[in-house]
Length: 127
Image (tube, rainbow, N blue to C red; front, side, top):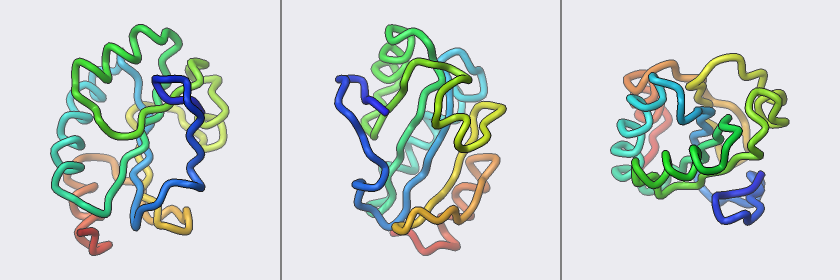
């Protein structure tokens, strides 16, 4: 997938003890509430990275959402919406959808809320 600067990002090359994959869209009301909360948590955790995969189809909408919310983590999209290969590979049918994965890319949990995410991160001993 490409980031907002059109640079290719490969999940396999991201170094972190834990990575949160979050599938979202700028038009999703729950995403608009959740992503700022995740951003606060992201700023607290040193070994925790976020890869935010947008299901937007318009680059302007996607980049505006990133900028407006100061999302300074890894942002990617192929601008194919629900037809995105990543969305299909992970069987995404709703936004937001999160996966907490380890450094071997094994799925550790699929939290449904910010509270579940905090709990899962705490249980996984993420610093």
